[in-house]
Length: 312
Image (cartoon, rainbow, N blue to C red):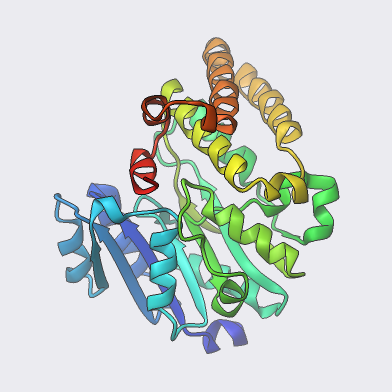
């Protein structure tokens, strides 16, 4: 183990809501890590399937919250405040399964560099993932590690601040310096923190050899709703676009990559992919203009309907 890997006090934080079988596998993978975390905090949102009881059986700390109180930013902020005695906070989602016993340790090695404030791992397609689902992970999480600073925004645009707290570690001192997670966020709270870190002259590390299995088989309608929420975030956090640049170029690169991938493996899915792309674009543009929509339409279009009720 590296010096910082052994000297750091580390907490794993997992928000859980009816995690089911995948949460059981995720919990077992945490227990099997060679570099054991000092704390594991599970924040459970009124699970009805025994996910909270599983956390207790595993010896994890449990914090229960009401479903109506869950917020992608606010709940992670609450957990960070509860883990103030730790140097690094590693966030997982309940459906992200650490790929091997060394995954946590390899992620933590990124903090050997004192400039690194955020380090996120590689997400591999879950077993049984279809071609469209698999390509999304392979595109966003390549096999080569990378470090990014604010200077990379001129080349990468908003991609410079890309990260995912489905498997992401934060240096707690840096997280506090940038104001912690936003208290209220419809999603992309990880990008907001990463962008603030870059603005403070620190670095985001992508650690390709620290892996989890994590992907989603979203329907076309779910994709539209997910991109609606991204559009809402970009409208509400407009400084992201001003500071880093619009995401359109990266979107075109994804579409072309997906077309090549499907042409080689599943050409029959090309029309489906085209329909999904149109839905993403429509959802994103509607999200950017959500202020012009009625509350009823916002609720229909959003994946996270509780966000709107909390904002009343």
